[in-house]
Image (cartoon, rainbow, N blue to C red; front, side, top):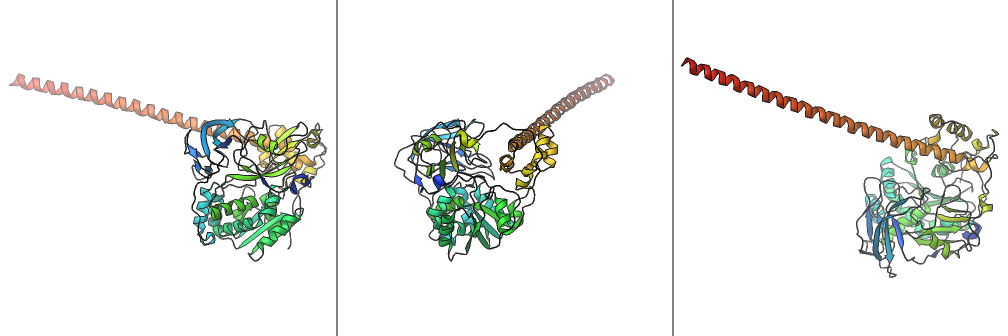
Length: 492
């Protein structure tokens, strides 16, 4: 099949061999699970159980709120012992609303409705079940999948792409799930295809995953799902890059893939859809790669949501040396962990313990204007010019050059011969823009409240004046009536 030319991209060292050939194994339940109520893009879930309640595996414990949200379910059976703040898997290291569950070790499942023929369900039924199961994008975006299904159907999507690129170094969780659970993934793809009404379904897999390609091709034989090989490069895992490679279509700036008739889901998301529709199991676990030079035995684990990261390191034999950095996700787009008590969430594809040699920190030097970052940018931006404007606090200038289109992949920083942390500038600028937007909204809200108060005070003053005038008029009328009455009596 023809592949289309791509813009930019890099070829970092993969470092996948240490975990790629290790089969997925289940992680034993930890003593406590810390299940955050915010594991997705959108509004956090609202608790529907209380401290002291006994829950079953797969039971709803947090209901989604609003149009963009996702429910949260108990990863196993046990007792809810706390609902409150716990360190969140976030670069800030701050706490977030979390439900703490003590497992009972019995893993008793909550009964869910399972259709006799999953492929006979209507698109609305599939979307509703996916939404009720709390499935989000497991490639890292964590956007509620049911919302994407509904929007894609309304937009008239004709092509479904399942992303098996997994371009981040070290990560092999998608590779392993394709090797070991290919039939379930293909079933999930067919169900998603029914849900959105797509005529075509493609799976893009990088050419450095021959075993996954073979397994997926065998499972997809006769189903109409096409398995295509794409070149191994970073960031092939970016949905717009995969669309460009397979279809030659380009998503417009600040647009969505649905705008050009395409829906993209991750292979792990397709597997989660199959588990929900065919087995009635909501999203309560995921496959996580545990790797890095400081790990004794890198591997892939099936991990209950809410498991502390430390339990994953312990299951892999602990550390052979003191890690210089702990990372949640991949080394390119993941974020640094401040400590190991944070829990695994739906978007956690990997946890890495990297040595000083793997980090390779170098003091930045002045920009030599070689334009290597420009050639590497998959979006076609000018990283050196954007960074120059950000350094001079010209955020508007950076936005004009396409800052909002930057995906934060880090390709520019990786290839920079001066070791300038370009992507850090962009992330900082995006944070500043968000802070400014929040400040503006706060100011507008404050102004609105002040205007409403002024209007209220003016109304109250006006009503008082009108009441006083009415009393004065009534008094004058009484006095006039009294005078008339007195005059009448005098005349009589």
